[in-house]
Amino acid sequence: MSSSHTPVRAIGTFIKTAAPQVVEVLGGAGLHFAVIDAEHAPFDRTTIDMMVIAARSVQLPVFVRIPDKNASTIQWVLDLGVEGLLVPHVDTVDEARSVVARTRFIDGERGFSSSPRFAGYGAMGMSKAIEAGEGTRIMCQIESRAACAAAADIAAIDGVMGLFIGRADLAISFGLTDSRAPEVIDATVDVLDIARRSGKTGGVAAGSLAECAEFEAMGANWFVVGSDQSLLRKGAEALVA
Image (tube, rainbow, N blue to C red; front, side, top):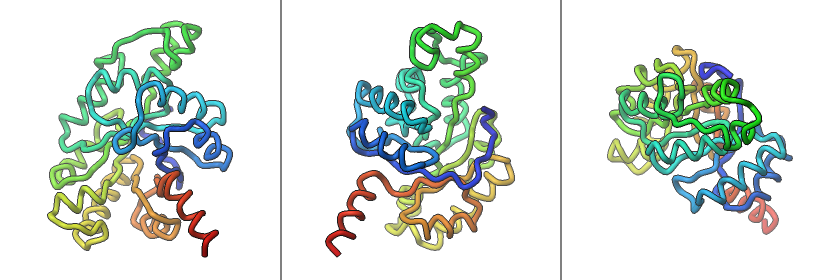
């Protein structure tokens, strides 16, 4: 699938609990995608492997928010057969180019093996496996002043699916403690406009469907709404209420 394909109002959630059953439940609920949060939750390589197997069993496209941009990390995550990567703290165009290169075989830096899941455990053959691997989706997180300044150049890179605004870290970059501060919202609007004009996906994290509607009006079309844990907490609070 083309990295420049722009989905229409795709809704997913973060997964922060290391249990494949959570993936099965969310897939059965009809989410468009989910993001395994290896940046802020305790996932090891084996656990993510099990989570991806669960996602594929229920046809749930799964991204991984990687804990770092190291080539070895990107390599093993992609070998598991994920839909794509959500890459934190992409602050410069050079960082974005480096990440994309580490996900690509042709004219890139990704090492090839036909044995992992992404290649059908050897069943695809080299040509088809390379073609499949080249379609990995890359969402770059924009969450600093520097990233906002470089957003247009980052969006222009072939292989970048879209821009995802990390409003909490963006607020901190501005010296603020409110992700809804006017400066943060203004920057969010600017980055979403850049994504739209570039023909790329504009992503945000939202706390509710009402917030999704607010950011959709600003141009967002890829929403990560809460997490498995926040959904569980809200359901429990509703029972108590």
